[in-house]
Amino acid sequence: MIQQRHAVRETAVEATSDDYLEELRNDHLGLVGGSPALVALRDLIRRVAPSARPVLISGPTGAGKALVAEAISRLGGQSDGAGTLVRVNCADVNQEDLEQILFGTDRRPGLLAAGGVATLVLEDVDALPGVLQAKMVRLLQSGTFRPVGSPGERHVSMRVLAVTSRSLPRCVRENTFRADLLYELGVLTVSVPGLDEHRDDIPALVNHFLRLGGSPVRLSSDALEVLTNRSWPGGVRELRNLVERAVIQSRDNTVGVDAVRALCAPQAIDGVIEDALAFLAERLLDLPVGNKLAAVEAALLESALRASRGNKSAAARLLGLHRKAVERKLEKYEVRFAAARTSVRPLPSETTNRGGKGPDHQIPLHKRDGVESSSNIRSIGVG
Image 1 (cartoon, helix red, strand yellow):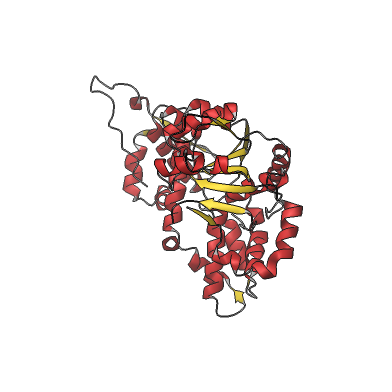
Image 2 (cartoon, helix red, strand yellow):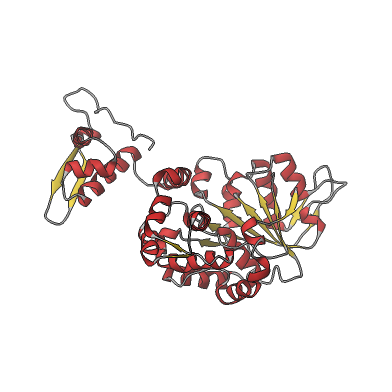
């Protein structure tokens, strides 16, 4: 299903924000902020955009990967009116439909043969079915493809941008993603930083969202400080949604610190926390260590003890555990306190037998974008 990409928050302000959005695209590639991380990202985009080679865009949930794809396409001239940028979400469409959408059939051409498509953005490319991964490798290597049920090949020329929140090397190791497709897509790579890596941009982002909404509401300086100092596991998307809720729930033109703290309460962001934990787990599984559960547990204990200066009760509160639970876990580790740092490392019994009784029982670790505005952008997915 092909549909024009619209969102309520964009459509409502489109008529009043055209000049501002155009200036934002031209001067800042659509990316709000002046932190070193954003400056480096814009520089990288400008360097990879002129090439026609594929680009692999990675980053955590809510970082703004879709905006980066649009900026690369626009700056590279792939969506300047000579063609359309089309997004296909590989996780939202089943294999049969996705194959026909992309490659078409002998009777009905797909996107690759229809013409007018300058840039193909494969969102959630890690979810691309294996059969289509093989066809995509051929497309990238030779510029040819074969429609479903057709004996003949077709030639196509378009740029492919692949977007993912997962670790594709890990997917390769799990045999869910082809190594040759990773090599083809990863000719050029862009890593989009999460919001926690550029918190200095939060005031500018807040003002950006308020300006887009045309709202007279503003956040107090204390409220902005709270937002700047907290963690953002859901990235820019989480911040945007919080600003929207603040505006909707505000009773006057100033949102104070108490209102913002209430919006930041854990119950308001449970879903975001789950997404952040899933993303963190993906990265932790890539660590080059043997017992990853023990390594994570030791690191959490070490961090909590450092933050609490060795106070076990305070460390337990940080970890959300009872003090006795922390003490039991610490029995597994040798803990050394120094004046300026705490060192926690596994006991020898973690990896060797003790008295011929076998290894100690391991305690498992318990479970714990900006603006879409180009008129020639289409999105494909299942509503």
